[in-house]
Image (tube, rainbow, N blue to C red; front, side, top):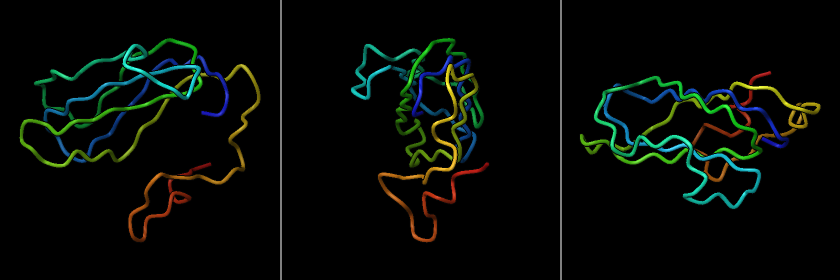
Length: 114
């Protein structure tokens, strides 16, 4: 996130309504480990498309782990949104977006909305 935030919640919008298995981890370090998991839905059996998970922790890094649901479809996240407040100025404003992988015709810069 580029700065330390009081992260209140994380909302995930999946591509379809099914039983996604996921975890959310938060940390002040980019070296996130299993000990940093604050939401564990790795045994989820409920069909969901949009979920909002309460976090209520200060952190700088957020990682979402997603596994294939029981239907064995490829998990697809359409959007991840965090809600909270920075203790400092917005250090991401005006900066370029990056991604570890981009799809054809879908550059990382298209994901940024201001």
